[in-house]
Image (cartoon, rainbow, N blue to C red; front, side, top):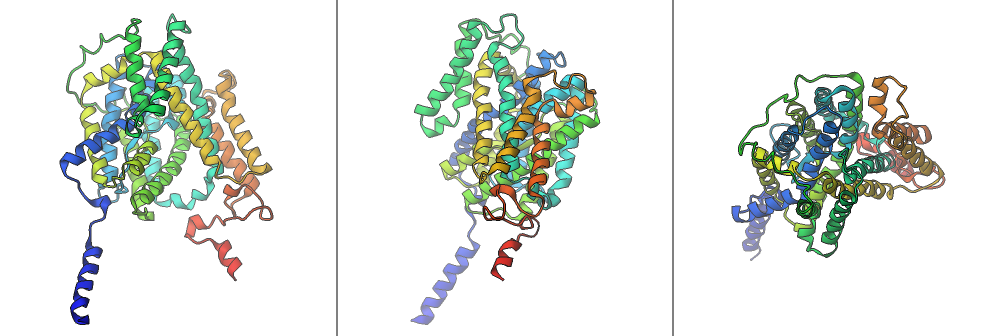
Amino acid sequence: MNSSIAPNTATIQATSSTAVHPVDQIPPMKRLVPLAFQHVLAMYAGAVAVPLVLGGAMIQAGQMKPSDLPYLITADLLVAGIATFLQCVGFLCLGARLPIVQGCTFTAVPPMIIIGTNYGPAAIYGSVLACGLFMFLMAPIFARILWMFPPLVTGSFITCVGLSLIPVAATNIAGGHAEDAGSITNVSLGIFTLIVVLLVERFAHVAIARASVLIGLAVGTIAAAFFGKVDLSGVSDERWIGVATPFHFGTPEFPISAVIALILVGLVTLVEATGDFLAAGEIVGKNATPRQIADGLRADGLSTMLGGVFNTFPYTAFAQNIGLLAMSRVRSRYVVAGAGVILIVLGLIPKLGAIIAAIPTPVLGGATGALFGMIAASGIRTLTKVHMNEKSVLIIAVSLTMGLLPVMDNSLFSQFPTWFGTVFNSGITTAAFTAITLNLLFFGTKRVPENGGTAEETPTTDANIYKTGTDTSISAQEH
């Protein structure tokens, strides 16, 4: 009897050991396509908001023309699709091979606006190319300096990113630099759009609520049409099918100050992406290995370089789609790869970009105001991981103050050299530099200050855990 049971047990064990993990399974097309569309809807508003915000700022600064806006949108969708497909499917040493949706990061928007205003679009995309190359080269060695970016640093930085973007939303709600800027109609449309987003979040089904910002943009635009605020004249001029052209705004330029500003953004993007890979791996039940993280970061770097070629943005994982993984319980990376294919198709339709570009500025401000506030809230949530004491509170306070000083007063560095203003005037690089420096000053390199306390006040974690994978402080206590 035992002999008859043993082969069956062995067979079961062999079957379970050779079973395909849900992450690597390919669902039937009738399930894959709608699930892929769900991921596109969850990230679409965030994806198109970045080119709309940056393009609008560049148009107001006289560095771009309104006709450039549809190009920015479609090129962004195209590269985001390619980046998503590469991250999910993988190729050689590229891609985490996890269900990760890639999109442009809002972290880069304030520095890119400053760079474009001071040097023009060619400098923006030269800096993006340099940022991508830096991220690609840093990927395999990034774990060695990860200890420099505990929640105390990243939380302060991300909070500053969200807060520094809110004035951009305020300007858009007012109507930008139009003749009727600040009118009751403009402000009302912006607030109305924000209210629509909130109502969808509150009362809609969870799946629909994922697209709350997108719904807010649509409803707000329809309302704006009744006030004559929607101009669709440019839609008829665009082709149905078109391919983004490399170096659309000319040969890239590489001002040192602009490159430094985006490299600092690249460092923080690497930290965020690492956290997203770990979170996605935990949700789908396939923990990300160091090799997967390095491959994923390389893919981020390559995608960002591709963004520099096609005049788009730095790319990273979209956190809202990681949340969607937990909600939908769909773990297949091929579903998300399908979302990448859909984005590529959308990026080949210039007429769609022209329609999105027709969204009125106040409506965009109302919707992105919610997004920017969520970025700040995300930073605050990261800071909740910090065990607060006087030192950690001081670091947060000074980092936010230094980051927001140039945002609150645009003339703060007006008498400084142009290169200095390019690096620090957005506030993003100022906050990052301040947080990193103060973290090292107060806590040094031996302990991870996520606990924010001294050894006597709270337990500490040796920073070498990020270098060797072993917490030496625990070993010392055991012996």
